[in-house]
Amino acid sequence: MLSISGAHRTLDSHTLFTDLDLTVRPGECGVVIGPNGSGKSTLLRCVIDDDRLDDGTIDVFGMAPDDRSPEFRALVSAETGEQASFFDLTITEHLQLLWRSHRMDIAGGAVIAALDDAGLADLGDRFPHALSTGQRQRFALCAAFSRPCSLLVLDEPERGLDTDGQNWVIDRVLTAKRSDTAVLLATHSPLIADAVADRTVELGR
Ligand SMILES: Nc1ncnc2c1ncn2[C@@H]1O[C@H](COP(=O)(O)OP(=O)(O)OP(=O)(O)O)[C@@H](O)[C@H]1O
Image (cartoon, rainbow, N blue to C red; front, side, top):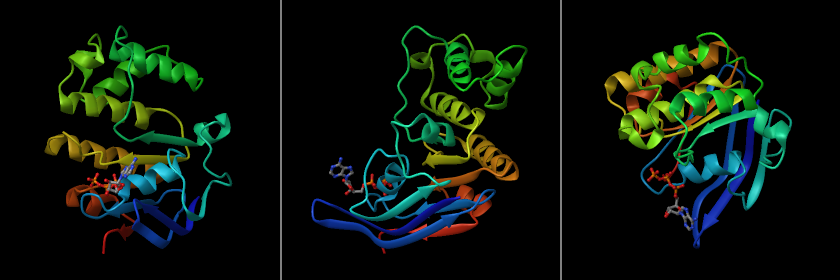
């Protein structure tokens, strides 16, 4: 379970959120909405230990956010638009590397099937820098969706995606929920929010 309690964060003397509580149980999706600059990414960054609350607590399946901890990183799969890539590895090789790190079986056609599911079946031999914006986003999400986790954190997964791509995101989030993954998602897409949210937090009000 993800439990955010009494969360407070001020940046440059501007309070982004205060006394914020949010609980997301396994199989549920918490959606964070609000205008540009309202603090959605900041909240998600606090959950994955890219930023720290000024006050309050975050509990991720019994752990405080700690990106130095292999146990914490095993719990959380995040796509926040800041993925680095190797210049000379194809997207298939990136996925194989990620899956090996999580002790997943890369034999057989599972990697190809995951790329196919993301609409990238014909692009497995491409380098990430040779993909379009939407294709790169599909690849980043494919990586986040395909590795095991207890909490999936997605920051504006709709970035660069066409309507088919947004429906794919919805499908993947609903699949994650069915497998008892907790999902925390920030979005500007009413299509995605309405389809997946069990509870919604609105920032900037
Ligand atoms: N590293 C930083 N240092 C100072 N201010 C920052 C930093 N990162 C973000 N901010 C500011 O914090 C506020 C919240 O930013 P954040 O990215 O969390 O908003 P957001 O709701 O995700 O916005 P968007 O919808 O545009 O993605 C903004 O005013 C932003 O300029």
